[in-house]
Amino acid sequence: MKKRVFIALFAGLVFITANAQINKLSGHDEIGWPSGFYAEGTNGTFVLEKDGDAIKVVSQASGTLAGKFNHRFTPSVNGEYTLKFKAKKDGDGAQNVKINLLRTDAWTDLVAVHSEVAIDAAEYQDYTVTFVYREDIRTKTPQCYQLEIYVNGVSGNLWFKDINLYESNNNQVTYTDDFETDLYWGLYQLNGNSWERTPKTASEKGELRKVKPSETTVLQYTQQVGFTDPWNATVTRTWWAQRGVQYRVKFDIGSSVNMPSVGGIGLEIWDGTNKIRPAEYLEVTPTMQTKDFITSKVTEEFAYSATFFVGKLPASEKMFLDNVLIAPIYLYDATVTDVKKNTLTVNWLHSGYFAGEKMDVSLIDGTDTTLLKADVEIIAGAATVELPISLDATKQYKIRLKDKVGAGNYVVHNFTESQQFMYDLQTDVESDSASDILVYVADERLNICNIPVGSAVKVYSSTGRLEKAFVSVNGIETLNINQGVYVVQVNGKTFKAIL
Image (cartoon, rainbow, N blue to C red; front, side, top):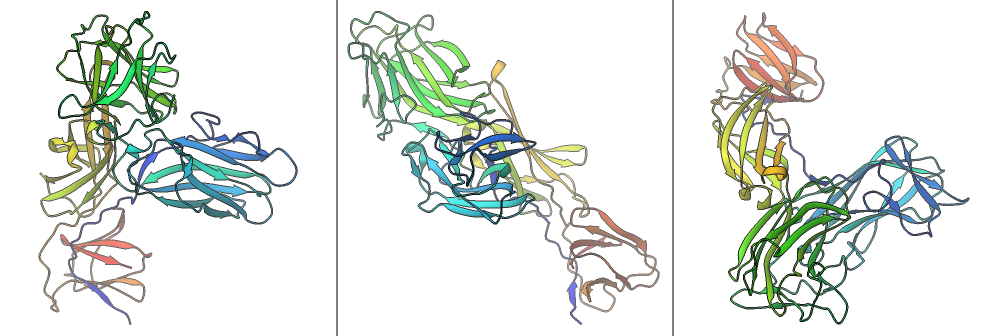
């Protein structure tokens, strides 16, 4: 007989996910460029259709499907990407589908060899593909990446749904430009990895270049002589936006001459054809000042741009930009670790220190919420908090994080909750004597021995569900129970057993 004894085990049960979802890729309701899945070019032999909650790849001609379909997304920094989706088929035999990620700045694949999965079921099955990337893309492509699914040589129709992209670290893309590196090698290219200025005609070009007027390097725009249209001269920086997200834009700005806020240098922020920050004119002086803006929600996954209107800058005068920063504003995936008697550690993933300055950490117990720690600096990424109450080993808890950023019409309330976790209150280990209560597994059954007659016994599953409750009349109990992790309570003493 195999016997495993468990005497007052104390480690807390913590349930977390291994990856953080950063891109909820568009589903069947959005097919087509720029915000959904789309078939590339005209050389494919299939079209994409909505079919219930799925995307259906439908043949347009006899024979096999050929081509690929894509979806663009905002990249993260130095990440391991995991693509998860469900798929099925109606053709004969296994349908081999190749998948890769593409860097759109250089039009190169993320990895040299495409990942391949075999779809071989008429009912939906789960599929997972992982890509590893270890290059800081902030200096390469603040533009976008592209998910590419190749269906060349596939026969019959295919269905895809629940397509989501996950990432294993906490560095959501945060574009930074301090102009110390040569980030603007694509200068004057529309929607490229560049700063752009208009007008573009040879006779009207304002000069845009990097200079080092002091200890820092800045981007300098010099107004052209004889320019006659003060409203059409602009300096623009383009990124790739993620639909449904609000962004924080921060920069340092100055000029060689005082510019009043009325009719001076203005700023607009756009996503594609939608203005998500109206024109706002800035008072600019020779002393660099920091400006900070929050956008409304992005409505398209498309080119996102901040445009500075500099047409009223006098001829030969200069505008300076430095430390241009942009980041999505949200928190995601709180986890709970290192649960101790009076404290626990909360870790969270976030979009950088732009997500907000401070946040509150609360304990969720059913419908009750208890504030554990207020005004936590969000840049830290983790916080150890004290527990004002003793946790019950049989109950489930959550941790809620909440912060606030912005003001007026652009206020953003961020919040996220951890997955449920359980905790065993630490007690002294009982001595191994004949009078001690023993909890062990043998012959695929849960055994409880040395129970004082008349004691209340409760058995809980790892999810906190009460499985058994009774009063012991014999002092020895043998329970037939399904495999799993169980918490056993006898007269207030807590034990754990794995069946």
